[in-house]
Image 1: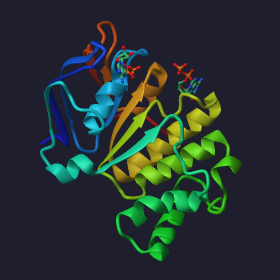
Image 2 (image 1 turned 45 degrees about the vertical axis):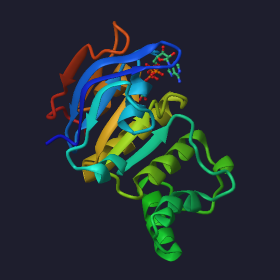
Image 3 (image 1 turned 90 degrees about the vertical axis):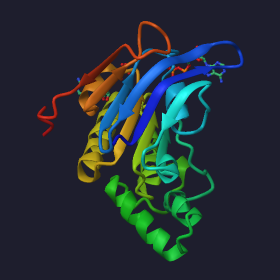
Image 4 (image 1 turned 180 degrees about the vertical axis):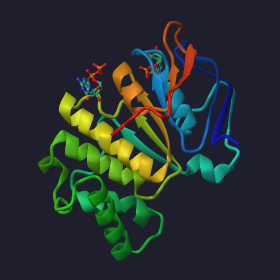
Length: 223
Ligand code: ADP
Ligand code: ADP
């Protein structure tokens, strides 16, 4: 069974804009799916509906794993939404503490997660003291520290310079190859979608619709 199934999903905003229409999409557990398309084609709206942050105005979104699966999601947005008054460690530990874990264990797990995104030694740094790429790493660590089944990323690296972006692409792939959480990655970059994803879902010519669904050869060498 897929992790999540969309059937005839549509979204009409109160303004009258039909941002998403007639979308049928199954996302398999462990897949890395890029949602590719130009600005305004409905990618974020679709992502937000899968995330439960916006309600469809038509169709349905089904989670065969039940309500728990629908909530087992990590998010990464383009603007890192870190707490500026908290250290990198405290930012990453927070989701664990909110889930009821004790402070010491949460701190230990957060430190291990920071090390996995190449931020060992920066546990005590505040977000303003970190570069944009490092802040993005903290955001990824915060999203993955609870080991969610689904990681959703909305144009996460679009504001970063190309080298930082390329490094983050590689680090994200390494994390995914190690753990095989499911990824839904929104991007308007053809290169990024081809480089990262195992499947590319294209929203393009007609706004709000899926125009193509392309498997990427899993045998593609990645070094
Ligand atoms: P993308 O992520 O591909 O750039 P969006 O999902 O953000 O596309 O937007 C799709 C369409 O819906 C656009 O025409 C956008 O202007 C419109 N839209 C997005 N959010 C809202 C909103 N909250 N209210 C009204 N219209 C919106
Ligand atoms: P766009 O302008 O469509 O957003 P970018 O030019 O910013 O796309 O690049 C998108 C992705 O491709 C980024 O991950 C970037 O690091 C990577 N990339 C771009 N050019 C190269 C290159 N020559 N070699 C390797 N990676 C590249």
